[in-house]
Length: 174
View (tube, rainbow, N blue to C red):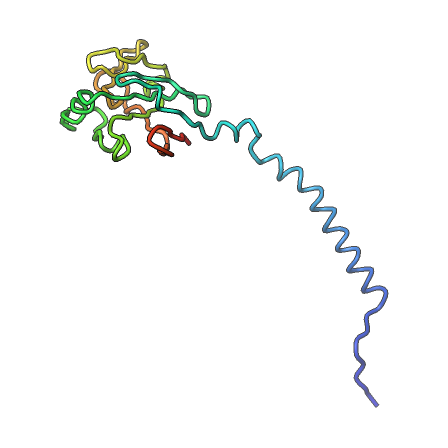
């Protein structure tokens, strides 16, 4: 006569479960250092954002800040600089982009660009050239007061980094 037996937990079942759990913890302990080394270093995290106080920057002045090891040009443009940048027809530009697309709305006088020439990576000089913007002495590229390339071998405008105004006198880059 057959009868149904209920499975009972045996000591062997407990040993299988305990061995599996200890093995899983061991594997996790071995994998953790490899995963942790993929995280950015504290020095990299410190450079991920830069806060700049705009209050001491006079009208017409260009200040250079550092963000992720790159020079950032912050230009407090005079109204004549803004007008000159907006008066340029887009068809006259090597890399067409309007001035309004390169600044934050309501803060038209502040231009923030990465200060590396888009031709060969030189650092242009401010308030130089024919357009009162930047001039790259290495190969003669000239940028206007909106950081747009106007003359020379540079193929692109000076890039605008990600930035936000945290107040009327402070920005956070990154």
